[in-house]
Length: 313
Ligand SMILES: Nc1ncnc2c1ncn2[C@@H]1O[C@H](COP(=O)(O)OP(=O)(O)OP(=O)(O)O)[C@@H](O)[C@H]1O
Image (cartoon, rainbow, N blue to C red; front, top):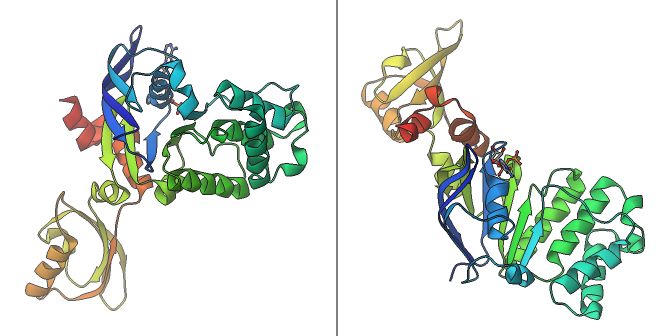
């Protein structure tokens, strides 16, 4: 059974369509990356799952039922706008959230102390949130989202504001939650975190899904780039959509960057070269990174973006 199922979801605000016919599912134990540029509709979608705002149309099923504040007991959420009551201590804050989620105070306290120890904050349990640094307060807020061992953990831009060591702690926590069977959704603009963690990725642009699949599938969505050194003009080789001439060496060898046409296998281009006696001194295949995919599918101007242009037709 999926933990979260979103089907044909639409959210309109006056004249803005923030979420446009969005469907996806997240299974137990899955780490699901929710990627998109500013204003793509990520926060709006998470808020609908939490029943903070209502969809214009479409359906959401959280752990088998429609979004409802009563689901909160099984959900952990780190909002994009961080903010806790400055006058409360770290541990009291975590216990307060645990109680809101139906936990007994003693259980929430012991779980809260464990989390603070894991986040390197054991010595600050009694410090007021207002006396903590921004990153420390963010870790306390993260602990409030984890205190109830949620079946669905939703983290909105969780890495922003954390130093590299604390980003590593957060990655460990996400993996730990997934290992115990929680479905984890997090939004991010930092592709390295998504590359390291996610089983599945969804790229949003203007509220519409542009891609959903695994990291390998995302990277395969863009044609490979080849770096080659040859004596022949490689721009005319079968399967090459665009060729950039690089350095010409004194011995007549020429560097090339080759952009292949969609769906062309680099091995077929290599085979074409060898069967046509095209001598090659170097042949390196560069697969697209998630960053390239993001820029192409999410960040690019539709006029220069064939996938967006096709979607707009
Ligand atoms: N309450 C609201 N009233 C009107 N428009 C809204 C409201 N909330 C969001 N929007 C609009 O919906 C669109 C999607 O916003 P959303 O906050 O979901 O994007 P996001 O992907 O989370 O962006 P970011 O990465 O910048 O946080 C934006 O155009 C935004 O202006």
